[in-house]
Length: 286
Ligand code: CO
Image (cartoon, rainbow, N blue to C red; front, side, top):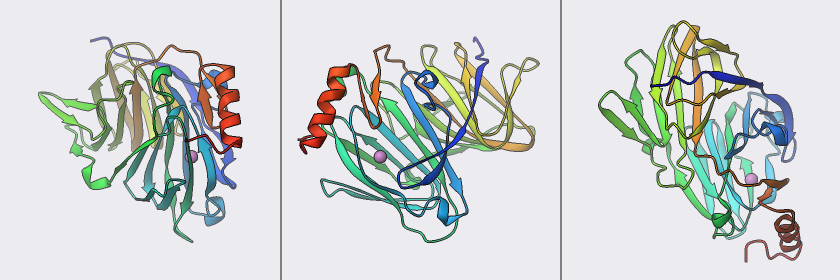
């Protein structure tokens, strides 16, 4: 086993999107800050309704997937085709925008905590124009397992390997073979896991603090930073004094050119111009 180490620490930047929703953006804060095939990671997390109440009114996407994971709160998703989906605490929506979707994501709460993540994963060129599709994954169908070193892990995508036991998440069979775990460690807890050697991988600590890398050579990863991992086939994460919660993402890189214009992510400038024309002519999703 070749342990992965912490190659780069990318602190999240505060920004806002939609109709003024406050976010922390790590992956994707600039075109240089992508990690193929991951285009963007936003953390939203606040107890103040002013930070989220206006939500994300209707907007388009083409050419990639959006994965929304609600830790706390209630959001209603509606698209132009009449699809509706309620996202409550612990639920995941995996949306493949493909050739196009126009949707809104609006909070269904007037007070209290709203917290979660939105991740953008690129699609290979041959899948960018496929029809839009959804997977609504309720919290109850996301397996959660107790870790031997204390703590627990939820498996949203890919397969968690614990000794002889494999725990498969509900999302399988995508061409980027994504891995998406949500891990909670107690104080002093350790998470060790094999990861496919060819995948790009990062983790993001959203509570507490953690150190990443082999025992004796671990490097601290501050809270609210994406920690990009080196090549290797395993990862070890140790929680500091107050424990830690983090998400761990890995996927197979596409190694294709990326041309992004806001919510459209294609391979060439001509395809972006086509997307803009299609959207203006109400043909984005036709
Ligand atoms: Co959207």
